[in-house]
Length: 615
Image 1: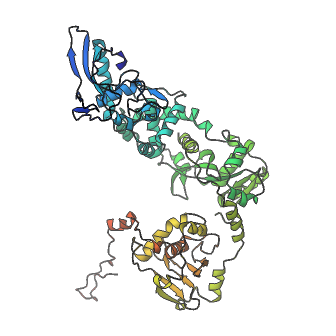
Image 2: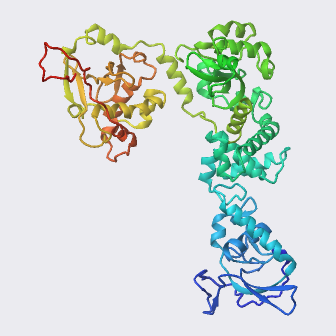
Image 3: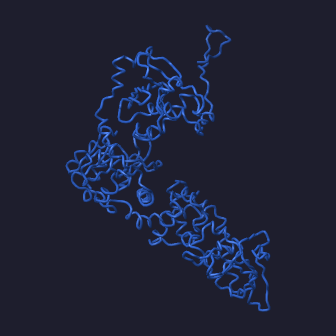
């Protein structure tokens, strides 16, 4: 629009060396002490020619050697300011950027000025521009569009309207990844319409996928007429993504078997599954997951989707992933009645050769599954596949595929091989063959049942006998992070406070027969009636072993959460000085626990003054 201005300007000051500006404070200060009054609003000056309108404008420099944003010399690749940016700056900042003005490439994001650059732009001079009256309606039209866009709660039309964190919150993609995704989708069949642009359509769909909110709320957020329009936008966007994006990022056709072996197989997995020798064996992990849905008014579909185990309606996609977390394929979803367990679904996939899985796999490739697949082991072996069930391992279809494809394309691997993985793999294979010596020690001395053989002490009495270790060392003991995440909760309940850095009452049971053997009674997280007794054997130099009477407490390959909590507090947390803010510790104060009162009864044998009793 501003390209139609005819250059008839009065340049008050175009000193390229100016370095001090004050915009919207009425004055602009330059280094030669000349003062310039900025224009708060463009002034219309009617000339004798009624076909021309003269505008008095705050303008930037139009030099080809200096950046109009930062006023530095254009050393790097110089870029012309686009007409979209010139219009945006003119209407939002009351600053006119002359045609042909240039800026540094670092001020741009996807060929548009960044938010920081927009704020940094300052006026340099006052210029008078002649504008043909034919273009006045065009100016008003563009001003109205900008005004309407400014009223929207959320808008993806201008990449500058939302910052990177807001893009991640609404769509799960960063701003750069979202812009890259738009470039890919723009080549598909989707087209802009009177209701939305391509950016808005994709943004609405990703918000639906990310947040799961209703179409009515999406219509309110993006100023769409009604929920039916939102539904049409979502459907058209889904079709475009499935056609142009999913095939290149999900399924056995998008990744080769050699690529999975070379790039998506961890060293520790190869050490555990193949002994570290085979370099031509693909290792993939297969498991079903849940996609919860609402109850259906169709009785037959409701019966087929009601899961007896979860007691609710759901669908079951079958996930096929590599040991790095990369999603090779997502098959399904399947219905979830009693006929569609993991084994039945796996046999269906193999016998139907879904997604050409048998063409991709080769003989002696390893499929890592859990006990739910035990009835399909025969089919796997008949097809020449190796099923690994180690004893130490214990429209929605399109939406699921799109979510998996987005994860593969834009998210980093969940885990990467490290230098020490091979050593850890060897250590795991050695530890799984060992017996728990602490359990044998407790049984030989009858220490499990005889509580009189233990004395209660405060943790400070063994403060010098329990070695200090780091969080990395704790991870080596637990072989995972889940136990360490639960450790704090058990310790807080043991101390009756969320502030574990102060002087807390953390009692310990010490064995009277073996002084360096302790146990910490730990309340179950799920039952008030169950208390576990994690037991630790230690010296001032090392932790010798552990045992717990919970379901998984006897293992020596890693440890349960109860043991991890005791080691975490005694060897790490009680030495910390910085208090951690734990909001969940105040949740119990938000609700009232009713007192337990026995039922009212009336009996002539009882004292008339006693109406009820407290239990």
